[in-house]
Image (tube, rainbow, N blue to C red; front, side, top):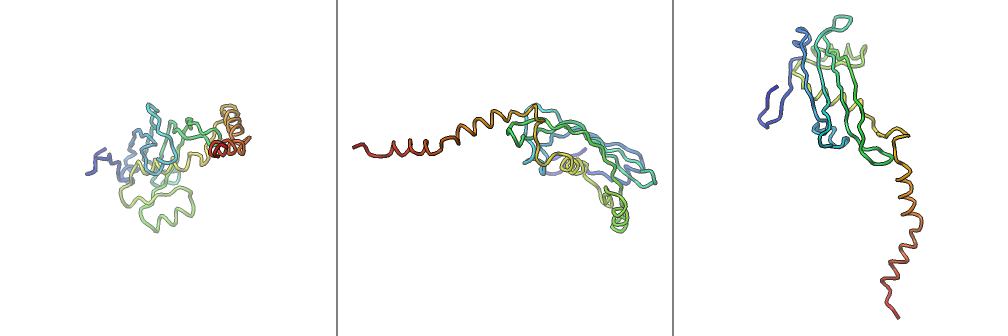
Length: 177
């Protein structure tokens, strides 16, 4: 992998050549550093990275294809208790490669995962796409792991007597007679 002028690591590759050669690209990425995932994941110091692997080859019908594998965990905020937790990621996707727009339309009608490979692809963009598709939209702990009882009692304590708190504020502001 090489760096572009901005100092970022570039992971661009010719997908059709990789498929023809049966080549492999692999690496690791922190999902918090991927721009489209940054607002969905929680950065955690020392968190394990997500390992990715792109393997070139052919599908059962002989079409050029890539197999994209992801393995690791992303930290997200539980929507019930608002605590971060690890969401496991173990994904393997077969991406068919189309040489041009015409082939893309034809293959896209037959297969769910088709990528236009006429220009170099970015491996990290493919990884980010798969993570966006595989991570839950509303992440939650399992019922037994989520501390919703503590959250519910804290909310109940605050909302139990809202007017009593207002009366106490008002009493402090009223002039004494």
